Amino acid sequence: MKKVWGSVIVTLFLLITGCGSADEVTEEISEEVLQDDRVLASEPLDVEPLIIYTTIYALEDFTEKIGREFVQVENIIPAGADAHTYEPTIRSMIEIGDGDAFIYNGGGMEGFVETLIDTMGEEDLLLVEASEGIEFIGGGLEHDHDHSHSHDHSEEDGHSHDYDPHVFIDPVRSITLAQNIKGALIELMPEEEELFQANFEMLKTDLEALDQAFRDMVEKAEKGKFLVAHAGYTYWAERYGLEQISITGFSPTNEPSYRQLEELMAFANEHEIEYVIFEKNYTIPIAEMFLNEVNAEPLHFYNLEALTPEQRLEGKDYIKMMNENIKTLEKALN
Image (cartoon, rainbow, N blue to C red; front, side, top):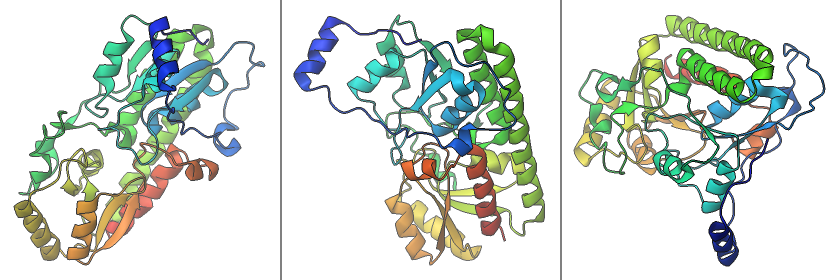
């Protein structure tokens, strides 16, 4: 169900410039992830799969789980890149335009989305804002002490971060993300509505189980605060009655001032913070410096934004990584 997109001018431009190198981060998904005994059996595929592009891994995973053999999904942002500041190449833009759908998070998560949408113009491409209908949390709700400094620089990188776009780390809000993806797949391939609906229901069950696992863990936790390098976990704090203390803002480029760092260090010492939690896919230098200053130990969350080739080979998926995140958070809270 691939479409041809692009003009002679664009083609000539690419030939002249050597076309560049596309950002290819999607490896073959492990059999363990794709083969699920609960998935409804279907007849051998006699149509081309839908070509779907996504911006973060959580959306890629949900699309694959709902669409199964009827979708071919590529996440365009490579591991190690920051979705807030990432800019796709010209070739990536053309490949996206050749696809059937582009699924993005929205809410300020991807800094390049507005430009990409404008570039697509009237192309026959379904644009899906997966977070449509989701209530975002503003920076002022993140924590109720004086360390909301991480979000005082919302315009420094040219994008608004007045609220936290990381809704995909919340299992409950992720049900809405998955529902919007299901709706897009049904719109593109209505003859498979029953299968897409059944696969969505199974994913919803898994997400509800994750929510319960979070609640069970937090109920037994000794502490209610956790310190992170990047304020990407506001939705856990809000849903499970925790307090997230962050060194940088909703985007890691929103760095604190020297005075704010001093306040954070005083807070960490006063509350005997033992751990600073980083993200597995990239480092934040100012948070590394803070870690050394307060003599804390590092822990790591999966941020669900991108998978490395190694993680794909290990059979990681959204559910498995979230369960590991629960164990990491449990350690930080005890």
